[in-house]
Amino acid sequence: MKKNLARTYCEYVLFADANVGPNEADSVLFGVRYGGTVSFRKGTENGPCAIREESWNFETYHWEHGTDLEKSRLFDAGDIGPFKTPDEMATSVCARAKELAHGNFLIMLGGEHSATPPVVEATKAKGAIVVDAHLDFRDSYHDSKNNHACATRRIAELVGAENVHPIGVRSICFEELADARRNGLKYATSVDVREKGIDKVIDDALAAVKGRPLYLSIDIDGIDPAYAPGTGTPEPWGITSLDAKRIVERLAPELVGMDVVEVCPACDNGDTASLAARLVREALAVRMKPPIGK
Ligand code: MN
Ligand code: MN
Image 1: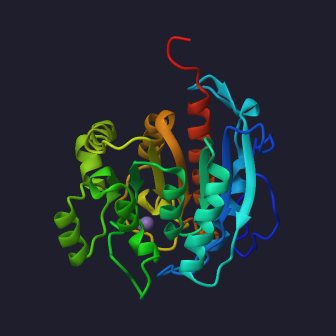
Image 2: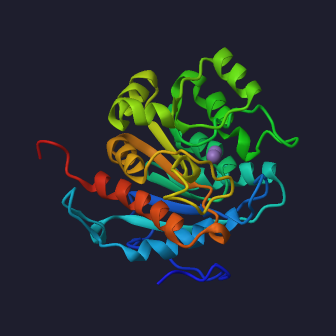
């Protein structure tokens, strides 16, 4: 049954199969309830709760990988936020992420994309793949460097522009394009994905980004609005939900952290939060897979 669009996401539920406490965990999930700099449709701060609710829809067994999330060691650490300013958000997210990282696979549910760079910093990732419709390479926007339109720029400052690779891009302003060229930022557009195929685009991204360990940031608007309509700044002509699955599937074994951001429940019929939850579960299921040869 579809969710009532008017519903509020105030109740607290754990992410499905988050069955262990912090001491037994090898994976830790937390949410950032922040949407203060979103530039169009509002409500992104309610993303974490909506994604958790939708996470209960799925089978625990993952037939493609032969793994069962009932046996996963996932701890749901709850949410942080709301925050008064983007700077307060960035400082608080970094501090919380540092508390939770500690060798765990760290998963952040957004909230807006400006929450990503402080998580990348906390995980000590040296490379990042970003799924996004937008290049997010503005130096600042609306007087803030921690605006969601600057997420990839801030990640590039942490790991080097050569170690960040957005996929699915199709919305770029002229200044961003000039800055991206000057900084040596490589990226794949959604048209590249259609013409070359997602596996070739992933191969090229992994070859270009030398830094390890890797972080994966999924701005849900990178996926076409046909699959992910519930987001603040939807952009037509995106990658498919199966392209996104393939990115998660291939990168998951070497990730130190990931996030899914920019889900906006007020614009959603439930399907966008459902896709976000499923992408997180895909990463967990792949990571449970026994190493090759065992
Ligand atoms: Mn973004
Ligand atoms: Mn975006």
